[in-house]
Length: 152
Image (cartoon, rainbow, N blue to C red; front, side, top):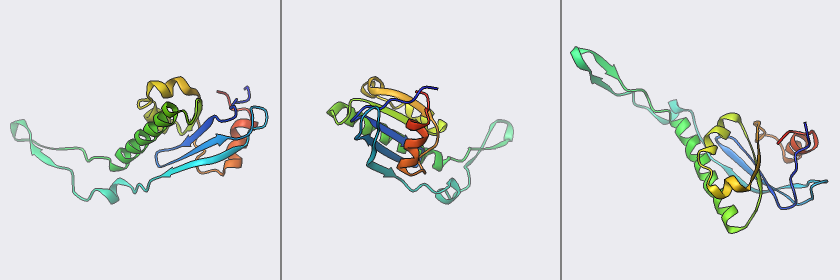
């Protein structure tokens, strides 16, 4: 594995479906110094706490009864969160706040956010890492990714 490269001014975005840390490298390529630029968080209780009604039922053909699958509100909220985050990253790249970023997310969140990348974000994207590190302190994220040699 080669050491991850993040230049001065590059962003490292660490997220899952409920929290995102946007970290900026204030150091250089050899000695990274990540600082928290933004924190985005949403409360997202389980679906059982969000939806109280039972799934709908309807009459199907030949007198049989059927039901509609219950909406997974928790999943919907996670998808909306990563969609909003992708929009924020597009704004940052388009306005020149950063020219390069690396995405570190749980594999599930990474799969969700990829569909929402704009062309500008795709061009600025230096790499993706499928790890859930959002609950770790910044120095530990730095150690896990930049110093231990996580591959791009």
